[in-house]
Every structure is written in structure tokens, then in C-alpha cells.
Amino acid sequence: MKGKIAVFAVIIFTMIVLILCWFWLQDVITDYDLERTSPVDGVHPQTTEMLPSHIDCKQF
Image (tube, rainbow, N blue to C red; front, top):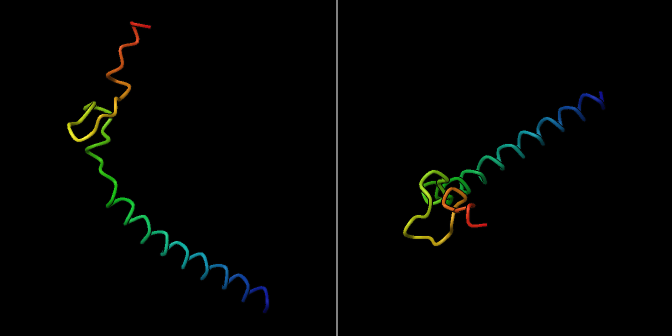
């Protein structure tokens, strides 16, 4: 009987953790700007970062 209760407790704990992680990840996905970090388009006006697609390796 104690083993069944322990397994049930682990399953409930896992479900609670998964639900909390789901809500946390929703905030992360909302805050992340996918268009600004697109590796296809290169440098966007709102950022000065240089992406690997725009680096000229021939000069090295």
C-alpha cells in the first residue's frame, strides 16, 4: 500500500511541475522576439548584432 501511495505522489508531483513549467515557458515564448533573431535575414534595424551569414570569411 505504501508503494502505491509513493507512486501516486510522484505522479501528482510530476504533473504539478509540468503545469508550472508550461506556464513559465509561455512567458518566455511571449517575451522572445523571433523576427529580431532570424538567422535568415541578417542584421535588423533595431539591433547591431552581426549574424554569421553576413561575415566575409575571405578576408581572413
